[in-house]
Image (cartoon, rainbow, N blue to C red; front, side, top):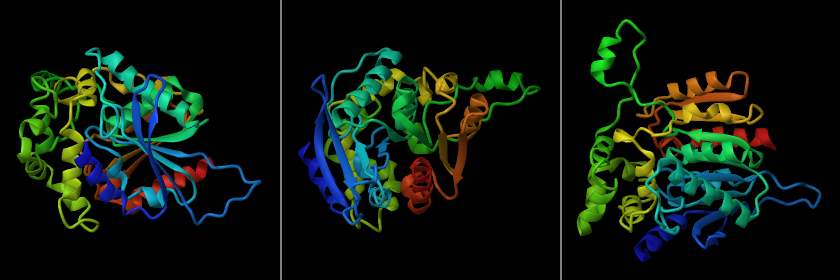
Length: 336
């Protein structure tokens, strides 16, 4: 954990706005590692009501450091919070149940306990990948707390496609188009059914950072103008070289090849029609944006917008940070 703390400190040193980093202790005594940022240059009027804060939830195997290209820009006009999900990064690593619904509920309950501990009445809730899935589940259960739901390349929305043999029998019907999963993702999910998904990183020991570089060279490239060394891949490694916890919960929620056991498209109708939802996809991502279109169809007349970011893969916020920040900032302005 000390190596993770050191690597993260190097990343957070890039932040120019006022940063407060601390552990938030939940009612059940779990601790959530939390960042809050405010713009020190913004004059505050006594009569002006504070703007709705933006809360950012990372994806599987990630942590708050991955938002380094976004935190300063998005905290110019409002407070931004980012936290390590329960079981990931520097947050507590409790045991998770093997039941999909119970594992999901443990994640969602930790988010609600975090909100209560921080003292937020409502928020603009943004989630990436697994964070998008959990943010949607949270918004369904606590709709009065979410002013706008922003889902960035969310995981776990579509139902699992039929096997290829079955699809070939259905050629007369409309074919189900399966997203192309990159080689690194296939390598990870191939061990999902036998081990915890990140077991290979821990088993590699001192060779783990090199393994991350080999399978995820894109992480280094995405941040190479900020760091000319392996800072970001070291960060990913140290986030995931610890005692398995959140990944156990993720495994409980996942089918083979990473499909969700409880697909979110089966539940998006439970979001209140009054809640605006924006789904933001990378045009080159392996996550199929048609799930966003389907979610918009299910929600009918409710405000649901689906946007594609050109030349961006799954990590939209790092591939095209300027475009990503502009879209998110415009959404925030639409709230207040």
